[in-house]
View 1 (cartoon, each protein chain N blue to C red):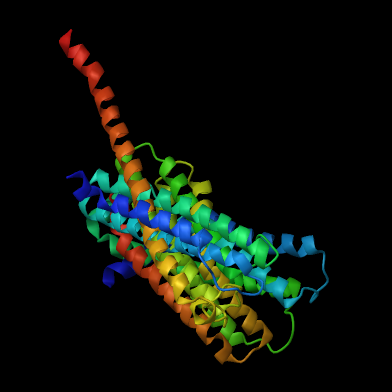
View 2: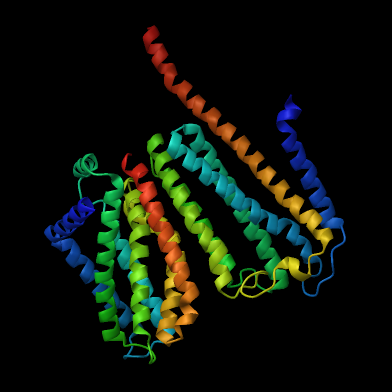
Length: 222
Length: 234
């Protein structure tokens, strides 16, 4: 536990020292939102909830892939090797997943803020707590599945293309569930309607989390 | 001796002959809209069943590779995945034919179809991932990891998600399963053998391709060794 905390602290310090990467991510999401806003050339509150919702999650998906893709290329191979002699690989992947979850939450929060600022919120009676829970589950799922895929892609040569190709289909079931729950939240439907989906989301999150922790020890050895 | 080892190939041939014969000529229940196209049940449905079985086997061999590190397990795993992709493509083709007859659209916007398309994307990505490594050991290990991960994500995609939405397929989104009312016991006598026959056929194809791969592997080794032998002789 102590080791994981130190490793997470290390991730934060690393990010802080390479601030351009973090600032790049923040600017990435802001400009993507703005590009979408201008492309639709809309006044506020003109998108239907369905389009609003799909667009929001696609922006988040691209941000997530870009943000998490760098989690293994930021450090030099030699330094990674040094970590592996110190702690078990499970702890490394867990700390990276926790850190990426937090990063995703920050990015999603910022994205949501800007998005609602320029696009407005469609319809009334949005179920905010459900939306936030959904965002949290999404951040965990994205972080868990994409961190492992980033690890896989970083071992290959053209890792940027590979990252996209490998991660889109893997993330899709998660994304579909997220979009459905967040649509329910937007429409302010009764929460019992979304229970099935939330259950599935939790199940998918658990599956990818467990698999990442189980499979990572085989990955770092190569 | 050979019969003892290869009885299952004979079984596959017998079953598939029976399935094709009875499937095309036997009597089937008359259903509105479906009409004679109901015979596709004997081919379309077993393709999917055996595809899942082949994918599962591929994943099991990937796990074995990670545990034991034998190159042969990697060969078997990738060839099972290849056969599964072939079955998936055939399943899409038969389904598309059937859909254009009964639903009036070769690719209706149905969650099950979309899930399968995404599943195919996953396995294509697996093949691309394999090709992006030069080092054999590295390729085997990393693609095994992705194979396991992809199958684990594929299962909820194909079994859980379509059941949560409305689907045209029987047994999903409140539609009654096929067996409920329009499949009589005569059809079952063809469908279940067909699943077994298709799976055996898939295993057979895989076996041949694995042998080809092993031979090629050995040939590479021999070719690598030859010039060395020359230089030492000189």
